[in-house]
Length: 133
Image 1 (cartoon, rainbow, N blue to C red):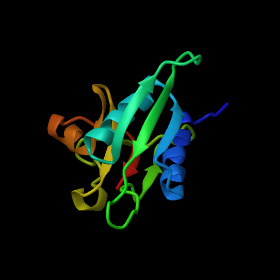
Image 2 (image 1 turned 60 degrees about the vertical axis):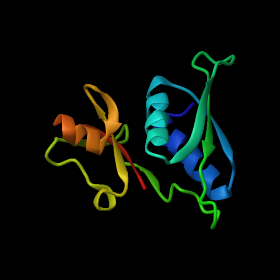
Image 3 (image 1 turned 45 degrees about the horizontal axis):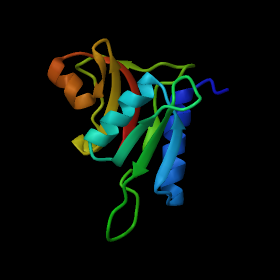
């Protein structure tokens, strides 16, 4: 049993990409599904599939994306910021910019999970879940 399932989700993706795996299998939740959709929409993963299994929530299969020429992972860094022991909140004015806009921050807001750019457009703040670049 993990106390921080989002950190486990991010760590599985980080470890699988650094080891060169094509697919990573992760226990599912609604929050993890939303983060997976954002990673796909932003081009950090190749594809994903939500599978129904014996587990109540199911599993997520994520196909990782690599550079065709260098065979290096597209995700250079994926880091958890807000954690159960120390939550990090940010207003719309102070949302972080990752690598001057080249990376993304995933924000959990009252209107759902979104990127920092989408939150700035809607002028809402929230909990800064992680940084990806």
